[in-house]
Image (cartoon, rainbow, N blue to C red):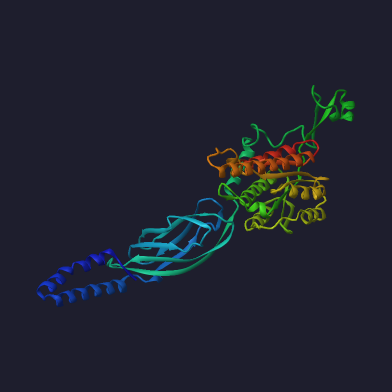
Length: 437
């Protein structure tokens, strides 16, 4: 129990008796009696106010949260009493991984009313987190005391990759407004390898597409019309090693990659292809074979929401051979990784033919914006000169890595943080519509 301002004001009315007692050595008994009356009123207020059994508190709302998004944590309160209450509530939030807003919830609730109280959190780490006790208090009927309680409301909230962007990209697919260099439909006739229909020859058509049997029957040139192949296997390889532990604009690289992989998987499935996932570090930690549909999407989401980075150097050999043993179908592979040195790149290149021989491999890197900022900064002192020299050397090595990969026939794309998702989706569309896939 705690006291209210009203009770403090009530006690302060007894100060004149205390002053008179100090000056005239009288009225002290009156002061004592007055304070006893106040204490009695406080106890009466406590006992005549409603008990905790007359309030029902439950956690409500969605327990699936998105990382770096503002999410509501909700409680439903049911006042079973015949009195209007003023409530204050405060939840126990797991430390370190949540930024909170309006954590102290306040409000009134009428008799026999159900009301929702909420506050907001911004998760900064993926995974499962348990929110435990709810602390609450309400003002007594005489408004002299506040009855304080703690109720156990344990609930596990899962922080997933950013789910907010999925709707945006789905809408973009339907409206053809999201993709590279203008409005472009995912279904482009004339490209791809899957036969779609026959049509008359027009100037500019490739001769290799002429259907000679149909031409002889129709007595005019007829060509085959193609569309991109359906049920194409699209893999997302996610490296959770040391390079993914670095931070870009306050976000872990791994978090950016996980969000991108989830969006890409959704786009792939929306386009009729099958998405797949392989997560690796020193060994393969998870592999989900190609599929589509809500159940498959759920598997990928569950695999992605709790993965974390390590400070280990990833083992490309085991990962690539593991894939080769499991998958026989020709696939598009998006490899999300990064490199610190040319030597690391050369080590990967030794085993990369295991993938690139029969598959289309795209390596995705995220720009190191802090190095670029240092390389472009003005020199004000000797330390700045040293820092700028190191940054320029590291950026030069990085460009050598990209050039080395491209010379080996491996697509390597370096993306800015804010363009990672869009660049990956555009590259998927581009590769899907190429005739050699």
